[in-house]
Length: 309
Image (cartoon, rainbow, N blue to C red; front, side, top):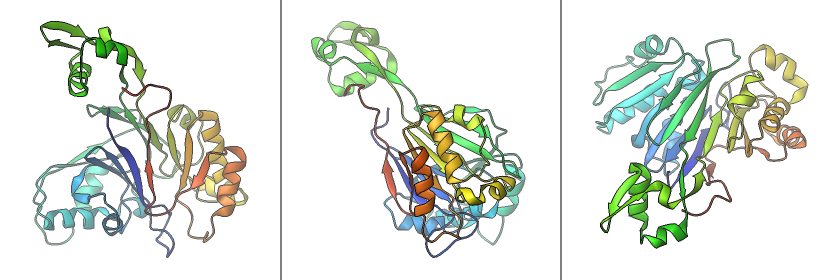
């Protein structure tokens, strides 16, 4: 289980950049590894205002190919090249990812210094990356669009009294968690000898652009943080739904029904310079709701009442 899971919002607006909000881009750091969800124009510069390095990005997950969600990719990748990146970069997205990004990333005169691997997803997949998984859901938007769920894997919780009996320090315990069985001081010790339940891994869901759908409730069930688009307030939701977007009220209903820990609202329309009405509508239904700002950081803590080991 990771020591650190944190989110930084590089852009929280929708459609086009405004003086108040850049277009959508969300960084997720899992210890030293960085994942990027969407990459609106200006993402690389936004990252420079934070302590999350674009050179540490290992995987990028694009929800769909409207400009406000991917037009920052070319600049980001060319900047990585100018900084002599060597590590491979993986980019995941919905259907036509290979076609669209192969053409888009060939713009301009430059030579890549690192390999890029492109993957197309249809929705319904669960990708295993070792310590965590990424699951996908096809959502309701005019073009192929995916929601993503990051899920840290559950691990055995250690009973401190049992561990002390075998004189196991933290490094040995981590080895035991990974291997399931070790030899220590001449004794064979199984994870079952020190198990004290399960530490539930952290879960974060990002909706992408979507009209409200029932499937999102199951997809986000019991998640620690639901990042859901809230393009408009309820007075405009009928029109927003027609274009594949949600209101704050509708996002809050999903959060309530899914029993999430916290609802963070993004993809705010440029029409709103003051987002108090959007936040108020969401809080009336789901009190643990709020609109997030550009460059805001959220540390995702391990769920309470699970013990410290």
